[in-house]
Image 1 (cartoon, helix red, strand yellow):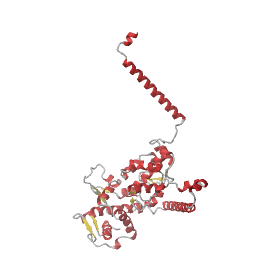
Image 2 (image 1 turned 30 degrees about the vertical axis):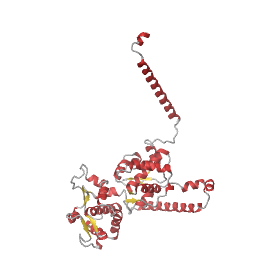
Image 3 (image 1 turned 180 degrees about the horizontal axis):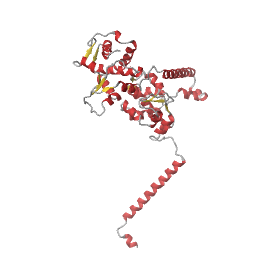
Image 4 (image 1 turned 180 degrees about the vertical axis):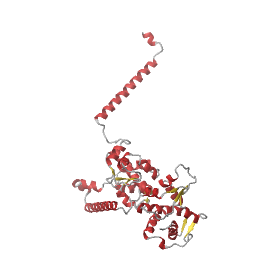
Length: 390
């Protein structure tokens, strides 16, 4: 089996120079990615939950007297030390994280449950020698990346990909047919077709979020799309998009979106394609903006903890333990009925029963105002006037 030093040598060999803090974090995420996608560790060594983030003592002992390492500072890289598959796992991490500053990687890992749990009860800056267990890493990061060695899930993905490809081809054909036609004539002759062509997808929503904010972790993006759907269902009684969310251990995940980011931790503007301003209506953008205003500043783990307390996700995972895999769909109806308690629909007329309650409430308010007015008038009377009247 490879060692963490082999991984560190490979990273330095590819990039020539790296700070020691960044190198530790890149090795940590290489281990996390491998555990999540293969269920096996990349190397045996463990990480400890230091204040600055995960640190592997075997690697630390080799760089503790320096801030920056260069190629061959840890020794000559041996190409046979890592398999092609192992190098691919590391390359995925480097593609996402090598351009990040060391402090950004520290901030990222400080938001994630394995490091947080290992430091439970400690204050920021406290020393800690607790090991971040490989199982806690696997359970947490598998929420980002399902293992490709699971045949049932792979078959499901292939089926979804096939359906998605067919839908895209159908849309392209419809789009080609509609070119050059008069828009008014098209709407009169085939209004349903026009509606289908402009239907919003979860990808449109994700592109809009990335367009507004430039950079977003994949976990956070999934949750923001989920809450955008929830807010729209609650306030309009209609979905923002057709795609569903599954009740994964890390929270709701939409497979159609996941397929586009499953090989990465972080997405930037245009990573999912160019945002089309016509893909969303003004009303739809307003719904998403409300969610972004409330939730954008939240850390990814905070969004996970929030949704873990809410009934739609809990009911979809009934009978499962934390960390168990789950492909159950969180139904739109369960989302609507739960979140409508937060947000009454502005376009919904009162039912007869509600109208009666409002009328009773208004009468009660008028009665209270009348009583207050009488008391006020009484207070204006000179003292003893009641006795004189008697």
